[in-house]
Amino acid sequence: MKPLIKQTIVIIGPTASGKSDLAILLARQYNGEIISADSRQIYRGMDIGTGKVTRDSVVSHPELVEGSSDSVTHHPQPASALQKKSTQETYFSEGIRHHLIDIASPKRTYNVTHFIRDAKRAIADIRKRGKTPIICGGTGFWIQALIDNQSFPAVKPDIKLRKALGKLSAETLFAKLQKQDPKRAETIDAKNKVRLIRGLEICASLGTVPPEKKKQASRSKNEDFCIIALVPPQEVLHSRIEKRLLERLQNGMIEEVKRLHEEDKVSWKRLESFGLEYRSSAQFLQQKISREAMEEGLLRDIKHYAKRQITWLKRFEKMGADIHWITDPREAIKIVEKNTHNL
Image 1 (cartoon, rainbow, N blue to C red):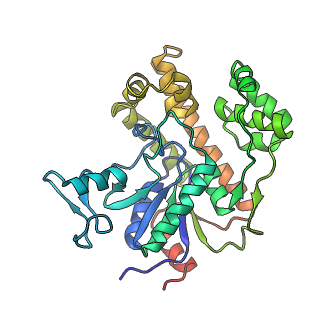
Image 2: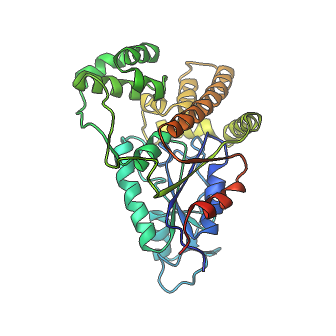
């Protein structure tokens, strides 16, 4: 029998570092299921631009289909009604169950508060079935909030203020936030108008974005999580980013954004709010920028985003997080075995 790990394994790192492959490797090693901590992969229809793991087509799973064996079987023939229902309600990739992928419409808001609620439920469900929870994703803010058990201010939307701020550029909004709340400005996406406006909205209501309340006294004493940061050397990471962007463009990333707008009726403003691939593709489709400017700017922005993710990780560690840094995914198993207790 595979060992039961008491801790929740957390795989975090910059974009294109190989987190998803590592999470699947560990899920196989430790009878685990994966909880996605990606602020865009939770949305249906946003597949290519977010780099979702490929979903299994038709599969039979023991915890979902009565009478099946312990193995995962790929079926070439049409699925039964129960199997169809199972694959619609759950997300499996390479036979491993993934949680919090494809759970929301891109026209609706899903924030950190929703993630904490849903991730806690997923962890409890996975534990109840005798498996190991593995959190994987690059949205560090969400992961930190979950680990620190944070709560956030309940500030209602101010429609009038939002309309006024919406007329301003991202640069102006960011400058305003820097003056009103420098600490929040350090970690926010300076080009994401939706998040910038929300930050200013909270400032207008509370005077500043208050420090989140922590229900646990010290992160350093928190033994519930084994945090592994996968950070390849810069030249390797940049090469992967360039290769991946080319593949996404070839696989229909721009067409995906066009479909989201035309068929799913997601507004251009909403698509741009998702940042990076979706912002650049939406701007290109609206003829705001050329194809060349889109590709060059997007590549630059993704590399910069990866740098900021690493900077955030270092700051998280300075704040007390016990992070195990690796450059090679093969190092992860030794860390898990050393830092968790097998039953």
